Image (cartoon, rainbow, N blue to C red; front, side, top):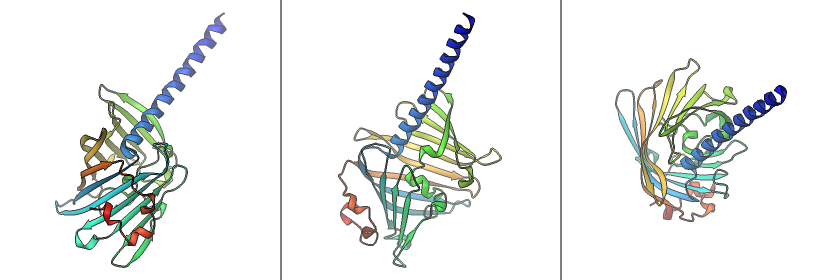
Length: 262
């Protein structure tokens, strides 16, 4: 009788643990969709403000186009980023083909050299156009690359800790995410170094509902190692534009699709 009770208790504990794991994965998946997969495609104008450790400011303006390749809401995706200003980056294009089960493909077109450059997977966690954001921050990190744990649940947020499965490929030891319960938007992310100190912090400064989708319209990334911060301010956000997939090809790196970049 005792053995039966003990076995029942053990099975209940195992089941509870599995249920908790499923719940955490559900939070992670929904947060990933909310951050990177709103609607089937989208477009936005972006003002990038880069402030260095001495308070000096640089500004860049670009348009970002996004299209989901399949209907999974968290699968393959393509991005096209076209820079309008300042003059030294005008017509520069950054393009990503995002995959779930392998490294993403990334290209950069440099008009001054008329050069298309492939960005190696090893460079994905380096500065995006001189900002505090990384290339990987623009397209998103695949959740399967990390192990996730629910640290805390408050009235408004799920607080998750994520640890890289291949630590040798990244510069952080772990990161914490504050995910809003009602929208599943990640509103804050702290990256920790090997000594356990926070060195990079992402913040969603403004979230608006646009065409029924909770959308981050202003965000900030700061880095204590180099000082300063970068803000991204989004305007003219539109969803479900039926953007042709053909635009996200090497052909359009040199020949920009003007219709979608106004």
